Amino acid sequence: MHKYSVAVAGATGYAGGEALRILAAHPYCDVTCVAGHTSVGHVMGEFAPHIPQYASLEVQDTTPDVLSGHDVVILALPHGASGKIASELHDVKVVVDLGADHRLEHKNDWDAFYGGDFYDHWTYGMPELVLGDRRKTSREKSDADYRFQRENLHGATHIAGPGCNVTATTLALQPAIAAGLVEKNVTAALAVGYSGAGKSLGKVNLLAAQALGSAQAYSVGGRHRHIPEIKQNFAHAAGLTDDNGLSAHYETSQIKLGFTPVLVPMSRGIMATVSAPLSHKALEMSDAKIREIYLDVYAQQDFMILLPEGVLPATADVIGSNAAHIQVVVDRNAGLLYGFCAIDNLNRGTAGQAIQSLNIALGLPEDAGLTKIGVAP
Ligand SMILES: NC(=O)C1=CN([C@@H]2O[C@H](COP(=O)(O)OP(=O)(O)OC[C@H]3O[C@@H](n4cnc5c(N)ncnc54)[C@H](OP(=O)(O)O)[C@@H]3O)[C@@H](O)[C@H]2O)C=CC1
Ligand SMILES: CC(=O)N[C@@H](CCC(=O)OP(=O)(O)O)C(=O)O
Image 1: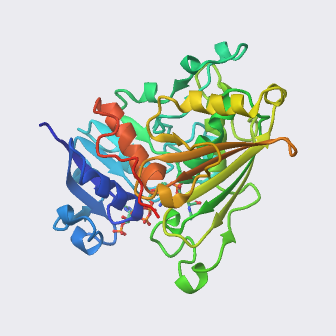
Image 2 (image 1 turned 180 degrees about the vertical axis):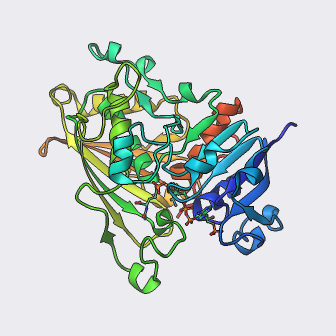
């Protein structure tokens, strides 16, 4: 069987490590190169003893020469580090960037939330992102009317992996946005595990004495860098794109978003609670009809698990899997629709979703190397 050779840069980090873990069981891929930064010259067994297959691979320097020539390159580098190196790669079939460098459609969004050089956006690696169709908004949608980002991933050569908080927030509410069930005034609160910050001690305080037994909000008040990306996704779901298929800049977006992540003492996982006021259309619908719309949107999406009525998503059920567990709840008294979504930030939120997108790009079975079976409790 033909196997694609894969180089993983940032292999010694959390996101790159999860990519390696998934690739170790991938029937069509073979990791032939790992690259890092401070760990060059060491072997993977020192950083990822849970992946014995790759224990003897030596960590190379992260240069275009080292990475070029492999069929696939996965970049799991800090934000801002992948743009330049990606532009210098050659003889590569597909490049997948797990960082933010190629996610945003607008330079001014990048400048406002990241800074440094801006690189043009790549094909967005979220196969289940709903693409609203403006021509269809005037009448009732049926499941056949929903289009998904998957269609743009076939044959893609450059894929931008979404942010993990972005993934959970988008998947929780996009059916309601796409079907016009809510006003475009969204509030998201997320419980987030520590591995989302990467292994670097600089980003958040990872001291167990301060992390364990404590929950702590961060990047509040409209400052979190995932805000423009989420607005971008909801604009696509709502069909609010221009003639070039692009969303509006985050400041002029019709989508309003309050976004509050809270670090909680768990290693992996994101539990997103995303709400918005019910639209007039939804106020006239039964709860059962609203649930049916969620069922319709995700009916053909194997990794999207709409839980039985009354069962709420829990991070423990998705750890180690590429599944997103979703629930929709209507609060008539408050006039709000709630979308809930639990994911594993490193798997569905990063490496799993990226490899699913890669599979589609290469024409492989979409679920190759992936599982929707979690580790619980
Ligand atoms: N953690 C998560 O849940 C998610 C992460 N991501 C994205 O994935 C990317 C990696 O994040 P994460 O794994 O968490 O981070 P980590 O800090 O855990 O790992 C960073 C990796 O990048 C390498 N590295 C650091 N600086 C450089 C550099 N200047 N040049 C080349 N390599 C470098 C490190 O190598 P070494 O160890 O050898 O120094 C390490 O392998 C980021 O862009 C992040 O936003 C996306 C979604 C979720
Ligand atoms: C705990 C923590 O700090 N989590 C990170 C999420 C990392 C991620 O999804 O995304 P990027 O690829 O955009 O870094 C955060 O909230 O910024």
